[in-house]
Image 1 (cartoon, helix red, strand yellow):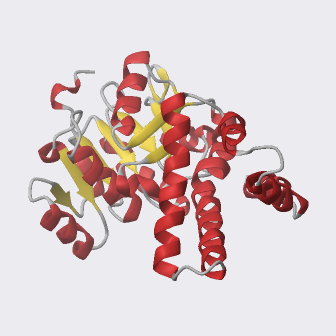
Image 2: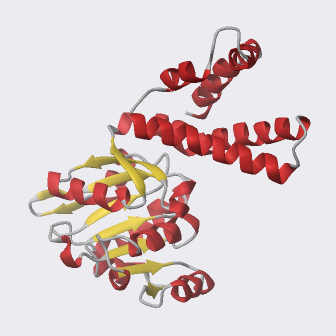
Length: 271
């Protein structure tokens, strides 16, 4: 697949679909003029056009899909089947790939919706499942990608596209639900820690806006340390804690309240 002039259609230009369009347009893999966004709401399309007039917009899913090499279906899970049935007749499986953003819609489901019966047997396009998180809006998503019936070249292209929106990881489909809990729901879990730390900061005497600035910068610093040093959390914790010091007392108090087990239980409950 020659990605020098690759055309992408994003069906569903709401929060996630719109974020994907904006993020891709700022990268090097796809040009804004080669991104077509569709939606049922003209208002949403107008908003995208206002952000970048080079975007192509349409209310016609089938016509938009026909003209692109990559079709990204960014609609709610219950809308995936009717959308795919709407565009199916317009798809050329020899030159197009279909990417689903919908959590819980499996390759088995997608195959059922998209299989064509021809004189040569059953036909299916290259399929990808992609699960980003809401940080895709800031081009900082941890995105999971699974491939089915796709070539190595097609897989590398999809990974490069979503790497420009943060970081993309190729995983087996069996890990998609776990990835959703760890990275998608994980955004909420991380923010809940931040909120709790801000409340603690207020109790310690800071104004709320000061506490938020301190906590957000501290969490960012912790992440930057792990990325820069290629270390694990326990190594960095050991650098902060000293025998009999205040940090180890605080950590032990959190563990007495079930901090680690609560996080693990929350992750398992979200799978």
